[in-house]
Image (cartoon, rainbow, N blue to C red):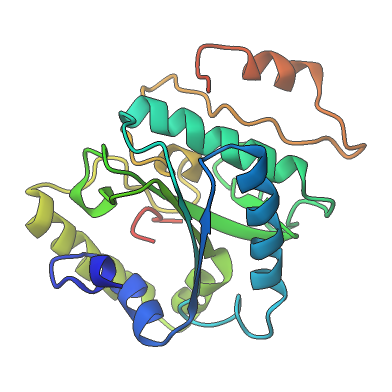
Length: 231
């Protein structure tokens, strides 16, 4: 609460979630571990199934991990995608139909329990002050809330406020910011500025529940273990 409610913190949506008590928090074993994955899958599913939780104007699920706390941006990025991959592998439901499962597609969104999320990674070694948190954490923001804000005509103004506050805090605007649909939001999840040819190390299941050969090859490459960053 103190981190989000600090006057300098730029995300007004997160502040609203805290003030309205429309957030849930879970504390887990180290990122990517089997123990963390099992508990996070259970809790994130419960959040999705909680009446009114995902449809709330400001709703978020925050997963805080016991460690590691000494990662640089590249190492944290690898752990973030390892955790999302393992979480996906525990998800028995289909991918959310309104987003792409291809992490390079402009309309990609991470799906769990058939619900699309924009994921924000926080960790002690982040180069962005708004992402610098004492422990590694993943914030799961349902896409539905952003669509509702757009429908109500509130999104553009909120985006302007967040960008202005982030610039005031950091001294410059986050260079990875993009409007949803212009490029994959996966590039924004970890907070690191990715290279132009960076490929998200994520392998979605095929319709039959298997990973295709090309996707397996992608996972073995060097990247190991909507706007949307304003979210």
